Length: 141
Image 1 (cartoon, rainbow, N blue to C red):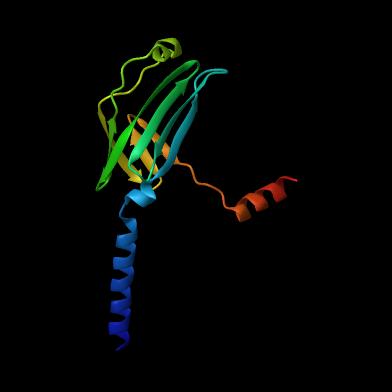
Image 2 (cartoon, rainbow, N blue to C red):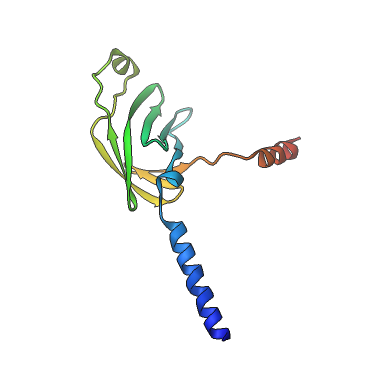
């Protein structure tokens, strides 16, 4: 009887864990970012915002250059497909030294909180709760 209970518990635990490991639109939505430094005084950043309504925005900043794009995204297994809108080129792009992204990108999911855009791994920004932010400000005093 004890062995049957143990085996039943193991099966339940494995099925619970496997269900939680699947990526869904709800748990993939959020803001992903990466900040890097290049040389002295120069830095860049990448930011991908996935919204629950299946829209997204992506931007890259490097020194004075800025490139961005927006559109809709969809989730299939362990891959996110970004489908950029194709707006006309603007004077802002020319002045910013960047571009507006167009077309479709395939973004692999590394983990639930990490995605890979091009050759850069972006990490999901986790929002602090009131309790954790209170504790953080208490320790800084």
